[in-house]
Image (tube, rainbow over all chains, first blue to last red; front, side, top):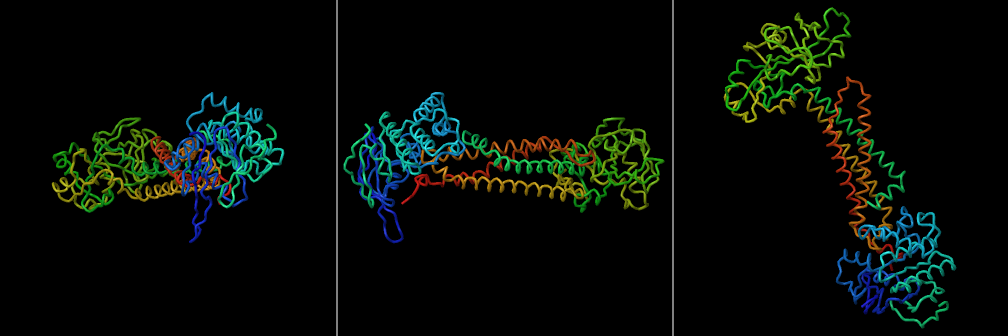
Amino acid sequence: MQGIQFKNVSKFYEEGDSEFTALNNVSISVNPGEFVAVVGPSGSGKSTFLSIAGALLQPSKGNVMINGTNLKDLKSIELAKLRLEEIGFILQTSNLVPYLHVLDQLLVVKKMKGSITAEDKRYAKELLEEVGLGNKVKKYPDQLSGGERQRTAIARAFINDPNIILADEPTASLDSQRAFEIVELISKGVKSRNKAAIMVTHDERLLTYCDKVYQMLDGNLELMKKQPLTNH
Amino acid sequence: MFLALKELKHAKLRFFMIGMILVLISWLVFILSGLGNGLSSLSASSFKKMDAEFVVFEEGSRHSMLRSVISDDMTKDLKALPNVEDAAPMGYRSAVVLKENVTSDDEKIDVSLLGIHPGSFLEPEVIEGHSLEKGKNTEVIVNDSLKNQGIHIGDTLEIEGSTEVITVVGFVKNESFNHLPAILMTMDHWRTIHFAAPGSDMGINNPVNAIMLQGKQINPDEVNQAIEGIETTTKKEAINGIPGYTAENGTIMMMLAFLMAISAVVITVFFYVLTLQKSNQFGIMKAIGASNAFLGRAVVSQVFLLAVVSIGFGILLTYGTAAILPDEMPFALDLKLVFSYAIVLLIVSVLSSLFSVRKITKIDPLQAIGRIE
């Protein structure tokens, strides 16, 4: 089965003597081509949810399937490989490697897998062209604006052609116009490349780009009523 | 290598500074090794070069030429022992020589007088002039460093405190003993100088200081049992018995060891702090799929590159220094020695970086996801 599935996933943290429930029996399925948003106040369990979806954290209970693979069965080195090949992360801004220029930000991901081919370079340039950075491939992160850094991160998330795209507050430090552009770019990439995407955000203005919106509250995930897609 | 090179290029100043420290340390290591090598050959080159495996001293002399007097008569007995291929005696005393007819005290030269039998395996090849000859007792061959003091072939030298004179007939290379350039002479003549005072030979017939033995299979215990009143040691122990040799070498070795330790600590701390600084960055790269091996290789290859370049510069600087050092300095760079210290430094550097690698493996990729609830 393609995409990402949570089946009755719970996550508990020990806090002294008591147990804290970060995720409570969460089930969700995101199929290829679907762009899903998870909103909720801070402390609601959004990050825990995203960390589990991103194979960074193992759930206490339940199963997580990514592209038909149950994460429970994987060792940490296999999890790293799965993250590399199946998951594209778009993190908060300035999460680029400071000493790599824009093109290398993408190529380093290829390098983690093995060697860089001419085809990889061509694809990386194509992706950067797509996010509007075609003329900035040799710029370093400190020479880019916040929006441009985030565009680089988007292109980086797509470079390995993963099946899952996970975005963690991708617009956290951007003004509204930049924020809309960024989410639109993610949405376009997800649709045109048929990826299953989850975006965690607290910015409700952006939800118009998403197919489904879930709300996270005290570890419980609930589907909100469907938002009309205004610009499609 | 990808990350390592890109970062080296990007943060030039940072890596230049740590590289400088490595250059200075390796420079000092090579200079010290050259100095140590020079000193030890000055101290014992005549011993080190001789083609012998074992040395026979007087019993109780604790491997010192100065304390040992034995009779040359036992040389033929030693030769007759099993496994002994050849044996030849040597005598040593330090002396001050002066060119004849020179009155100024500035021209006095400190030397080691070594008595040998002409034609024995202890006689080094001359690089100029001719070798010692039996019967021509006043003829000597001298170390070529004496040329710097204005000594030429044919010069006659007076020996202070003695009425004997000697004539230089040849030069040899790298012959010094007890930090002084060697003058090699016939055993007979050496004896007349060394045992000039009546009774100073303690009644020993044909006295010498030590007898060198050739033969790899020699068992020193058997030799000691066969002949009374002697102790047999390996050449290495005999070299260590030369006054000051172990102390000098020990000091230099200690300094070298400290330098190695310092460079290990400097590299460890520098890259560890750098790794701590970059832990968020490493976390992100792990989150997007970098394995520990990938990131670890980046750090190790970075240290490797930095060390190779820095040590290379250190070697260049060392040879530059060697070129301007005065000739009298006991400084002898040995390519093999420089190379082996370079390898040791490189290994120490790379091993030090493993500390950072360990830290990297412990970085949790979770920290890339902003806040952990």
